[in-house]
Image (cartoon, rainbow, N blue to C red):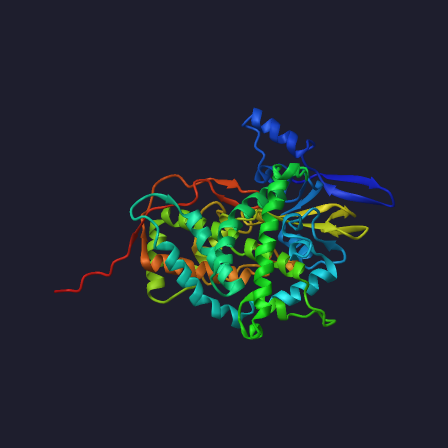
Length: 452
């Protein structure tokens, strides 16, 4: 690996020592890459050129320190929230100022404390049957023997699961949310990841269209909040909305309706799109590894789940839906390893790079779930959910959902293998999805005929 050079910047009151990186801003490098395809823009190429750590000039964030060394990642995940905080701008741009994604420091800690019981092990167990039921219903409509994209169907399944989990029942308002949320998420993902000016233009500009959809969402959720409060026994319900209505901060104050609405859109969005995309990648990988698929089906038929967990880990390692996470330096400067980042600088934790590091995962580009069989993944090497105080609060929920949906799929359907080249990935704004939607060809599994 190339030894990185250092770049010392002098700033008022202190100095910052940073690794080298490309001199050109990201948008200019995109233009160069469009004119000359031989000049790759991938982070993997930057790692080969500069080493595990380097700097990039990124839209929205400016000069950014990129880290993919596990020891440094451990330091960042364990950092004092007063020294390293949330990135700015962040997903609060689309999810609201009361969203967990928008908060830092004590407000983030307090909000996370209120949400944690919703994803406690005992409560998770209550959701397992619901997940299997919704998965079975969603898969019933798949055509038999035809090649179709699995991602839209997986999106519908995971959306139904999170809506039922959050609100606890069906109804006209939930049907409206089921139609509205995919449009809201698709546009919000693009707006959150790109520097589009916040012009409304009478509701016709991108932000104007998003604001109209968000107002429609708020009206629906406000009705659902009012209906839940009108239920005198909501404290005894198990849905997340009822739990948030009864939650209290340390000073005894309840969450405001705006805070509840922002947290619910966060859970609804983060709780279905990334999981659905991982499921589509799982389908894409299974069809290209038929021998492993046969082993996995046999193990699930025998009531075992170790191989399934290993498979999920390997899908998330090789096809991460979220390729990076950020921290912003809040202290005067922050030292990580031999680098010192100045106040206000963003540090990118390159999930994709650390999970494809040959020193950590031999033959990193080879899809090999067996590398995780009987092995507990290192939490600073396999990091699909991030880490530290900002680790995805629904990680356990998402893993259980992946387990249940995949078990249901493989128990009741036979996937046709393919020799086609693996699908590439494309950015949906925040998440990276299979380029063709994770094409699936399936047939119902039929029990073998009894011997005569």
